[in-house]
Image (cartoon, rainbow, N blue to C red; front, side, top):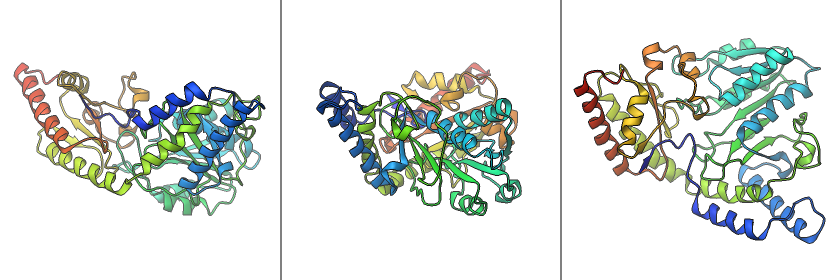
Length: 381
């Protein structure tokens, strides 16, 4: 099997899986129980929080465990909007955000009456910072921008965005770092809130993290108990939270070497697609090396992906959160591509586990798939 859909999810790291399995058998107590077993589980969870804080260079009390990045995004965005709405009701995001951000802004706009600005992008999917500057007002309380786009892979200039937002003291900056963590260097300095997911870095599904600067206040979305500093009620998924520290440590281990390896894979694949007729490469040259989005004009992407499956190769056509929608990817549409390009897009994503031999196998197989389709004469359409 050749798996090239690492943006959607990653396989569970053996070390993380073994640690989790051991905990399931031995450390099943409720972390909020006051007896010794509960206190032991709570201690392990707080140790994990501290270890993560050290790796991210923040305070332990600034980290909130969640059920995943979608919940973390909702908590960050709605939490800030409801907390600071007396200071202003203008919030800003982009047209190329993950659905858990974009749809949250839509809900705040349609159901709660917030004034939302959806920033357009350039043709390569990146932001025009002058447009952001013009959008900022004294009523702006939140700007939410992803660091790495999950479909096309463009990287937004977070340092420049931080400088713009910091000129407005009432505005908070939230950054979705799900596709950045463990894949490119990150810094939380100057950022008010950031979100992460474990299953994108070889950890458990249902495991997320919200960074919230201690000076930022947010309204909780799940009320009840005192868990997570009163910001997320409910019995802690303690064991999942405990292994997040190991997940992150392993993801950050030898990061420069991993990035260099993946960059070489991406370059080889990109060079191959440049040789093909009817091919448009949508990912910019300076995008994330972990993502390569291409459009094979006149070919149905579903036909290509299913044909590759017969070779044991797995790629995707768009974000896993929107694969059941038939229309063009919102990200590609925002980039202004033609319908022909947008409706024929394929997303290939790499890992440090991928080898150059894997890329050779993909190229041979893809050539065979294209030749077989050409023989049928309908190009998969």
